[in-house]
Image (cartoon, rainbow, N blue to C red):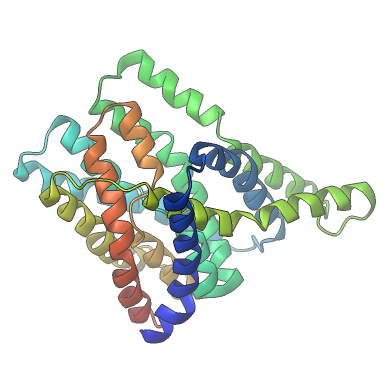
Length: 311
């Protein structure tokens, strides 16, 4: 476990700490960096990784099915545990948001590369793409159900968010190029230079993801409803990976794919859930508090989890 802490989580913590220190020391424009990440670096990372990845076999589909199935299972368990506690309306929506959507991007992708190498990173990328789409569709519906939005306005919001997601177009473009059989990474001339430029952009994605995560933690937030925050953190860091392990075995997933899936299931709450909670007024203080607490606590829980996965 000490080797996990030193070789996997410490490099991540160093970059996160730099982002945290920068945010505490100066008034950085975090919104602009988020937009650079979402509309520039994330699509480049997905596009380049899909063109370079070995998509033979059922690994990609297997990870997508695993991600969707885990979200459904987590939703059922969260509802079953939340209902006896009297959670309704905004509290229930917030609990679903923080339980269903984990930080498989900013935190999960770098952790997968450090822990499992390039093969593990490719598996994690499929999980991340699936999570990104679900958070911008199902996540919007969950947040709106506990807030003021609903009806036809909700449907328009979901469709609009999907169409604005550059990750969707990056996936489509990469798969289309692969379907033609054209080797863009190996092409020379202008096309090769174009790909090299996009690849250079993609290399900045992982470190900037961690810097942004540190900046988000550096904003500071008072913890309200500590009991619910503790419950939500337990769901995210403890219950989720346990369910993921059982689900993976039930789906016939083993080896590297299972290890990557379980690790990603044990990631803290996704930061973009705070955007949804604020936009739809779905108990944003509970969501923000859970993001902060689960992110800090994950250094301990992931050390243990990766040790159990024999990383």
